[in-house]
Length: 472
Image (cartoon, rainbow, N blue to C red; front, side, top):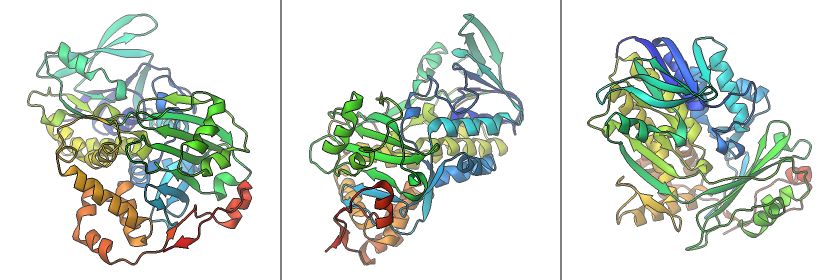
C-alpha cells in the first residue's frame, strides 16, 4: 500500500482515535467521522453505553498506547487513575478460592472510561493532524465490490448527505457497526462471524470511597461462585479518580440484575460468593443511580478470510472483535489493532495483509474471553473456531480449572497466568513445556479461607477481620 492521500476513520471512540493517530504517519490527511458530539472533557456519550461500567487497561495495552502516544499513562495517573499491581494490589475470589496476593508482575490502569477516552482523544487531537467531523453518521460505503473509495455521510441535524473520498477507510464504529448492511449495498457478502454470548448483564454505581481508600486499599474482584448449572455472578470494586469507588455487579444469562438502587447491595450480599463487596458499600455514600446494560457478547468477524474482501477497507476494535468487558481486553485489543495497522502500513502491506495482521493480534484476547464464557450455563454459541467447539472442550475446561487452582497458591504459575491475562505473553504459553513443568513442580502455599486483607486495610474501610488463615 503506497503513501495514502486521504484516510477516513469511521468512529471517534478509543479504537478510532488510536487508528487515526497512526494514520497521520502514513496519509496526507485523516478524517474521523462520528455521530455523537464528543465531550470537551471526561463525559459520557450515547455511543458508548458500556462506559458506565468497570474497565481495565491491562499493562500490555498501556505500554502499546504509550508507544503510540508517549505520556498517556502519566496523564491518566496525574488525573487520578490508579495503577493496580497484579496480584499484589487486588483481592480476588476465583472459582477455586481466594488468590494469594503475590508480588505484582503486571499491572492495570483503572479509571472511569470517560476519563481514559478523553485523555487519549486529547492526546491525538492536540497535534492538529486529525480532522473530526462530529454529528455525522455513516450512510454507506462508496465504491464497488472490488474497492471502497470513500464514505457517504449524513449530517444528523441537517439530514444532508455528502460523499467523502479516501484511499483507505477504517471501520471503528464498535459493536453497533453497520458493516454488514454497508457491504450488502456493494454486493459484498458479509465476513464469517463467531458469537459466544453468555448473556452478561451489568449494573454499576459510583460511591464516595472512605478517605485514603482509593490509594491504600486494594481493588476487589469477587468472581463467579462455583455452582454447577447456575448462572455466574460477579462483583468488582475499583478505585477511580475523584476519590470514588466504581462498583460493577454482573451476571450471566438466567441471573437477575439489580433493577433499583435498593436492590444493589442486596444483590452483592445474596448473589456473590462472599459478602466483601456488600460490606464495603454498606456504609459509604452512593453518588449515582444504577446504570444497567446487556452488551457483553463476544463476537468476532474474519474479514481476512473473505475471498472477495474489497480493497481499501479495514476493520478494527469492537467492530472486528467485541469482548465481554469483565475481562478487560477490549481497550488493549484496540491499542494492539492500531499498532498492527501502523506496522502493516509502514511495510507497504496490502489491505488483506493489513487485515490479517490485525486479526492476528486480537486472537489471544478472543480465545481467552470466548473460551471462558463458553463454559457458562445458557451460553449461546454460533462459532466455527475449533478451540471453542467439539468434544475436546471439556478437557480444555478441566485444564483451565487446574491452572486456576494452582495459580492462586503458586507464585511462578500465577506470574505466567497474569502475563497471559494481561496480554503480555501469548495464550500458547499456557501449553509450553516450561509452564507445564511449573504446574507439576512448583511448591504451593496453603489455600486461604477468606480475603487476604491486611489489618491496616481493614481499619481504613472500618471492617472487622475476615477469616483468612491458610488451610491445607
